[in-house]
Length: 203
Image (cartoon, rainbow, N blue to C red; front, top):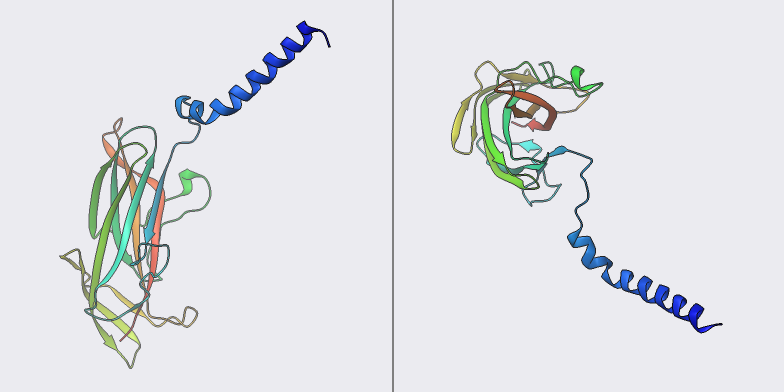
């Protein structure tokens, strides 16, 4: 091999090695264009994991979960979370088909939570709740009086649930819907995301 050819080969090898060594450092400096913009919306159980969610509910007993909103929209977002409570026959959010067909529950919100979340940040709120209700052992029916959420008493008068043989429980459904502020319309719009926690209302 001639000296000139060896020199070229040597320079190529040195350049490749230099790039391999520098690539971790370069990856920190390079800014790649973002192609996906979305919001993460999830609940964690009492152990701060995706487990240990409340299920069998006893009157007057406190239960805890953690509500998380992670912003990947590319800007600081203003969120609204609407809390609703329903039985199996009442209006539920619809999550299938194109976004235009994905609708929130028609039930009124019992409690609203708002938060500004910076881009690439996660906002978390501990939720502690309990229920007051009357249990009829003969008819296997629960008539709700109230729900206490983070110290606030929410009226559930008129809410009831009955034994469901398919689910084998007295079902109550805690629903959290995510809404996002639209600066163009100066209003919150449903973000096509909701969380659903089924609870068995024991005697």
